[in-house]
Length: 251
Image (cartoon, rainbow, N blue to C red; front, side, top):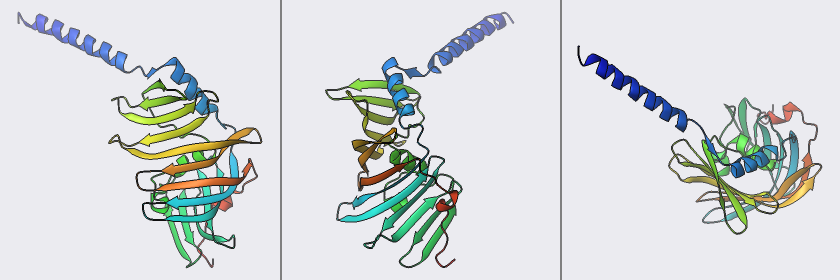
């Protein structure tokens, strides 16, 4: 009994110390310069809600290159439709997401696919692990910012590099900004094993209405690369929700 008050005191002190340390580590670490660039990301084309476009598409891997044309239409509310066009300008393959289901149609042989998914991954169709919501951001000229705990800036000769990390210090995302224009030149998305899941490069920014859109972009991982050269882009066109629902050919 003599030692009980002593042990109680030690226990209380330890709890207070752990609580104070937890309170310190629960405060996100974001530098002032990093917060400024994060605000740039949030404001970039933030009013753009719907979009359409056409362009030249090149898909590369270690062995070959496939060139085609593509047309797309999207809504920031996780809705997207993309068609790969044949030589006559008609859809050869289309895939779409309406926020509830993912659809894919091969118009050549009438194959049809439908699965319930609010934000489907497009890896099996694009060979690069990009989610629909991320691709919508990219086609809007925005960066899909992942959840992060700390944000710091690395400066080199031409760029600011915004580095986003998890609570445990793992890199979540890196974003390159041009020092002069503050436009994004590149970003990398990292996986749990600290490997780069994919990288996006933006170039040839052009004004469309009140927005600034990169007309040349590429999405790549260690095995494949998708290059898109936009030739026409429409900002805020009227869009019906039915265009994001694909039906089985013949229905």
